[in-house]
Length: 381
Image (cartoon, rainbow, N blue to C red; front, top):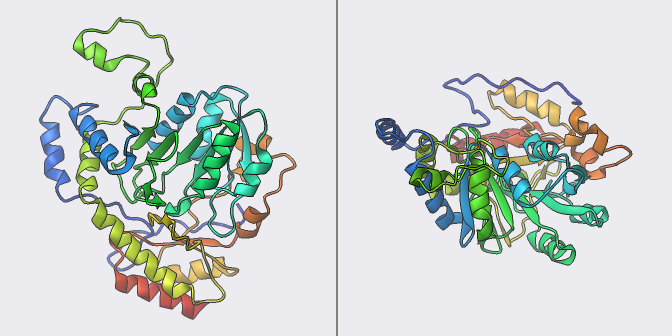
């Protein structure tokens, strides 16, 4: 990368960390109960969590809990019918977990540039990349800000290709009043430790086509009809290559408890987000990554700013025991993706590459701390 990253900040009584996991106070006793039962792997708690998640976020779509967001993405790509050599349009700016499962399949990745205002996938860039060989479009709701879903859905219908939403950042986000997770063919979520909703590690996949749910469950568990096997009605054959992508009851218990408290989590994060937005938008030397689109309800996982003196600001904030970082990087710079980017230019990504910085947004950041950080930044820049 273009600069030496600062190491993560040690946890201290004084100081503001970039991430901090939210764990419900109920989970200690509830997990203890789980540990006293026969089900500590995938069992009834997973079913309960899936059902509740579906009610809250997926509407009529099915919800399938997994061991990670990456597991969910790989399953989504398989269920979408992606095969070796298929072209898939995806964003150049995301966690590598979005695109590495495409390497598992042997798909041909076509990277799209980002929108300079939102850092989401650029719709004009996507349009230029679509060909007869395009089999899917993958979008990432960066930081929790929904992509321009109307435009993506138009392209999906025009070219008869599925939209796969990577909503690792976007649990709780909405587009035109519809929850992310209820809109597209497939939507994936991550519950990894630093996300605003965590099960320690875990994920969820929402699926529009009910006919795919049975296959999704088989692929999640070695290709085995697990329910049939447990009921003694399994035909004792495996005809699909499956994986070990299930969630455990321990993780599901963490998830279910936090899900009951999620509105509180989200409202607090949005409060911190809007303090930053209101204060830092006044600074002419800073761009707040947000399009202020009233059709989009931000999930507030990340608050990102862009500025010329990014490295300077990061070092100064660290001196004040405030941790910041870039979190994700452009994928085209990684060796594993080099063969997909020969001769390509990403002007918006180039423009922002050395300018963006993520500020702390979590339940341990108080409104007073957010105001202090904002005023400090405005004083420094």
